[in-house]
Length: 390
Image (cartoon, rainbow, N blue to C red; front, side, top):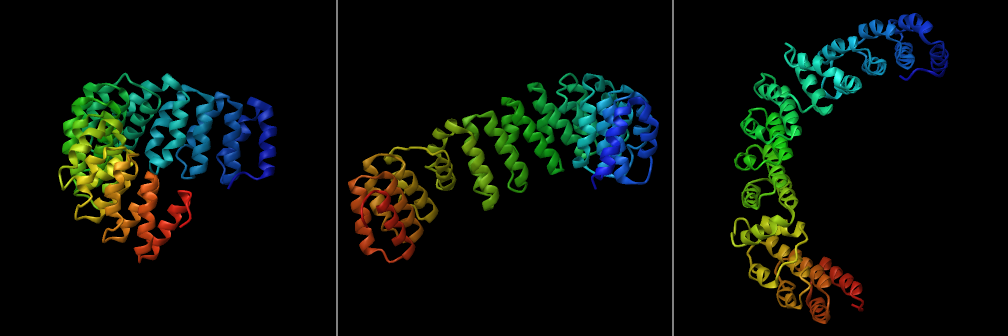
């Protein structure tokens, strides 16, 4: 728990004493009462005297996460370089990446003075220290040691490999694309995802083909990361491979790949229109065009209004409504009489979006024939929005 008010009051009084209070606070820090130890660590940090460093270093290995956070913060605030080796070694005592935050923040407070100690940490026998050291370098904006870090892509520990990939992705050096491409095949999915993310950050054209090969439906997490990276690189040639991978994915994972296609932006428009001619790719292409809020010519959409798949017909209806072209009324009238209620409902929304007297007349006529209650309500709402009485 947080230190009680009485401890807070005592803390403030002791801080006002400055260096003279360090021995008393060091003793309190070593005690068994957690709230007192927390308050003591905070006070020592606020005093900022280097004579407190030995007592603080001795408590870095505590299993109390709250105390560890305050001890690390105090050492960072004091800024004595003598504390750096202990801080870096303390990565080994952390329970996981979420627990690294206090130590990472403390190390970052030392700025470039921490780099030599972190570089030594890269060769530690402890995987946790190696992972923490490379992450600290990345967060500090270090860009000067890509060769040293690239060698860590072959580390025995998957977290170290992933952290090394993230560092190289932030390096901005496209020459590292080949090293990262090899990691896409890593048996650990987290490391492979980190490699894909890094290639996307680099934006190097050299990463395109390896990323396309990583669009494996058996590794949906990696495929999603690869698709996002391809969108970041932005080559229109990658749109079709991402669409093809999406057709082999279950709905959730397919949605992530569609989102990636949408992230290509305007560059995706032409390849998506071409993909409409491929029956296997057509549903995903239409869904992507819908996500792009694309306005397509009616003649591009109309041939697909008779597709055998409800999903395709509904998407065609939505896109017809966005054309702003009165010529879309004809195919929409046909879709308003579709056998599928869901397609008819999509056509109703599209007709309302299209607007105009032809759309109003078509909706009124459909209202007289419609038997599905949901579609009837949709038609009535649409007519009201269009400024006419149902």
